[in-house]
Image (cartoon, rainbow, N blue to C red; front, side, top):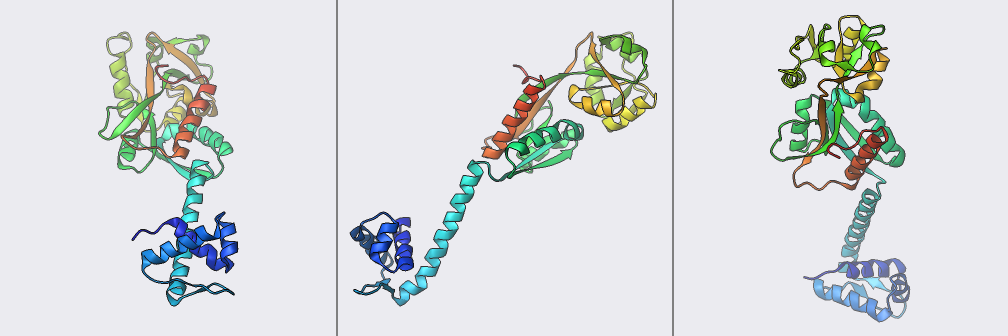
Length: 304
């Protein structure tokens, strides 16, 4: 059985108009071409569908039973095609993004606002989670994109460099180190230090091992969240470090930033997606907006 959309559209047009002449005109066909498509449809189905008379076109019993089904099929197909057009034109869609809590509460809301201004019909669903869960969410398909610090690769997940951010010292108001335009790690670690739990401190200690011998990394406090660390700095409990994307949050706590050097340490952040997956147009566009927004802040793509 070889039935085509042209044949189905011919039947619907004929029934709606009640005339071969009008149906042919609506489909930009000749009457003979339209009649041929109806006959081909009848031949493919093995039943007569149309009662032909000189006065008006009518349907056989088979035609009356088939027509509502064909009409619905074409309407559903039209809705699907419109939906695809909307997705391609970014008039609708969903982008699912996973990011660590600090990135999710500082940088991403601004990127989301910039994206929404350009594409108000596309929803961005943000999942804020632990750093190590970002890759798992990408691998499982729970999200389309993951953003986070560089981590060992996970099977099924591809990583593209996003940005290399340098560490910044976070100091309370009137702290003596604020007199310096830049602060060395040795100077900073002579102060009571507030660190984040987990790989943050482990990687930092590894980077500083053998480099800063005068004042090794021995945190006074190790906390789970940067907001807690900043509150402790504000309360005079010590100093901490952060990356530039958290600058607004630092200022909200009435604290100050200074670049760190000797050595200059950076953290690479990456964009994660599933290997072999094709990104939807909305997800591709979100990535473009993200990179453009970061470039506008002076944060070039890592390795560029």
